[in-house]
Image (cartoon, rainbow, N blue to C red):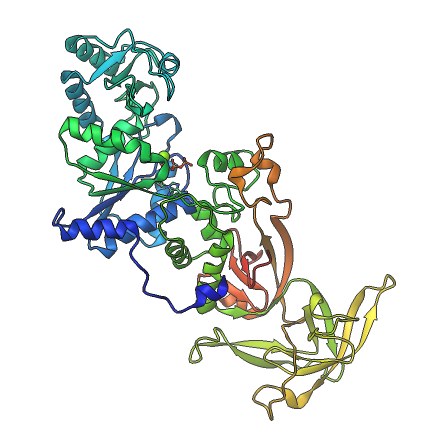
Length: 554
Ligand code: ATP
Ligand code: MG
């Protein structure tokens, strides 16, 4: 995969939405395009939403149009301002600016008037059946539904009852407003769909003003139309809703927005349903919506993902018309690719063993220098103190190495990154045979820039014991062990596949310059991976989150 992706960016062909838009613009159908992103404020945004955001805002940018942010707040029971605020923060963080911030609830009056218009046209009626009865009389794909006994109520009666519903005369579930279409329609959604239900719950914006709330199908398309949205883009499961979307627009004779569907983003090792994500938060499987293992945008941000990497990912995923599942490693690849170019480098040892350079003077410190970012050869550099006692990674030494092992081994030489070549002379062990100290000598002529360059096969990182500063390091991994979380066996639950090692802790022994870093993005711990200072980190208790390893471990 890496090779394919590293190919020079080819001029890619248009995706089907770009084709539609280009044709519409060429035909003069619209002067400019207007898209929208319509989240329901009932949870935090996740990477699937990010895909939709990049698509909607990206198309508008590409064709000189604009994008509205519209909160689809038609279900007061599950919605909250906390979610509204987080959604705005996340979209802005991704780097997008909406033209207008709008709320479906702002259209309640207009939607109500249009519902009256449908009643007047004989296209809607108040039904006294319960939602359960309505469901049971809808029929099946092969059998027509049974008309409601209230289906033929007169216009006047319907208008009166509908007004009473609004006034609060009835309790939850006592009545609904339904469209009057066709109880034998092959598309089940046309069998007199419910337009309004009664919910006596405080709404986070409209308070107690309303106790009837429009259903998705009735609210969504009309909201698009009110805003003059030209291209209303949603996910594939809504394709069966499209005829109904068009039906309302036709009957109400309002601005003809058009709906287009693309495949929703699915990711391996990930659950994306808001219900499940909320459950993970409520049951404390994770520490919150922004737990760095969550696929939420705030989780990814805390994990060290950059907006650039998420936009790159959305671009690489493309726009499909068929459902598929994207490999999580593509997302990881994108953040590596972005951070590789931009992040500052530091050395940190996570699983240390002490190394002593026997022929190096006691008490001496030398300052080695290295670029913050090797890609910026003219960029700033840092100072790395070097002394007689160092920490190296336990894995970088093997007493009985296999053939192709180029790191430190008895009698072998390696270069200490940005510093001298050392040779392993001896190891010291405790009574249980664990290595407690590696004893080496160094070649004083081998300091970079300090004589003739001599190369050895292995280079390892290190941190001076005396100068090392410690930090807690949180090693995050995939939250689930199963790739296709949407196809787990029926007798299992998604929580049966939680990865017990999704979070491990280590102590990092770090070079001091790390703590002066001002870059505000993840840094690279050389030879290990990318790490970002956690939001809970403090000067006394620094904490770093692993964004991703340098190479895929899976
Ligand atoms: P859930 O069903 O988990 O509650 P949702 O799709 O209902 O999620 P919304 O807030 O209604 O969440 O979604 C806002 C927009 O984001 C919609 O246009 C929806 O199509 C899009 N979206 C949601 N999930 C994905 C996904 N996985 N991939 C692409 N787009 C998505
Ligand atoms: Mg939805």
